[in-house]
Amino acid sequence: DIENYRALNAQIVGVSVDAIEKNNQFCEEEQLDFMLLSDMGGKVSKAYGSALSIPGFGTFSNRQTYLIDPNGYVQFVFTDVESKVARHSA
Image (cartoon, rainbow, N blue to C red; front, top):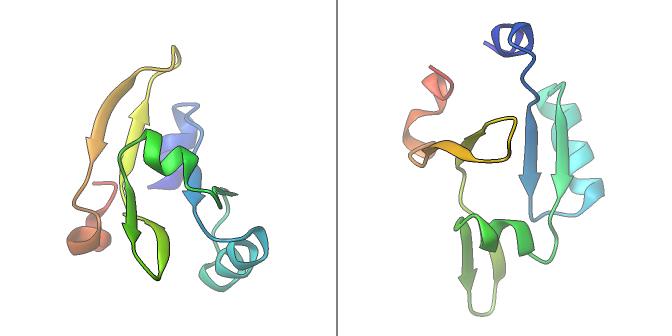
């Protein structure tokens, strides 16, 4: 589906609370061809409501997808990514 989004001039960006090095490794292993940004302090994840803080383990980010329009407004939030990864963008 990524080419369909690119044809619409959409920009795809991932955000993870993991370190840059770990994100780079993940992108290589999964052969991702879009940016995966590091949100190590969880600031972005907290702002979007996807941060999960577990005492003793730290902050994690729940997998979610946001469609943000060119004006910066969130138009759609896809929260059930974990159970529907095979059809995530469908």
